[in-house]
Length: 112
Image (tube, rainbow, N blue to C red; front, top):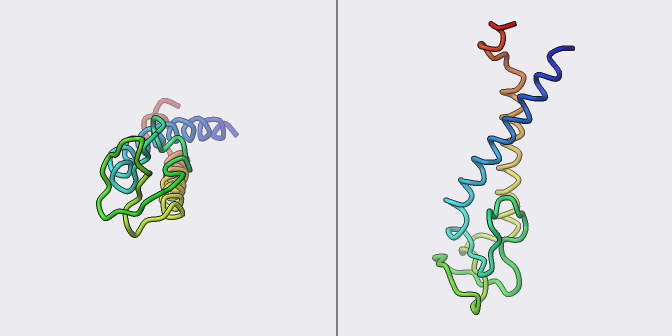
């Protein structure tokens, strides 16, 4: 029973770390590459579903536009596709965090 709080704490901190990593990856490789919102919020990964809205135009290459222009999404992508991508990030974070949390950490086992 002593392992359950330890696993929970490891999972919490691993999820926090993976959320930070996913946010960085999303900002670097998804925002303004797969879509562009002309009135974005900060850290799009942490604001799911608010990626594009209103009149959305499908374009071959996404470029940053002014607020007077419509939001854009890369051809071949949809808002549903962005949701699937976002959920895959979240699912992978949960899966990896859970898997690593239940693994015995060598340095923690040596101290016990």
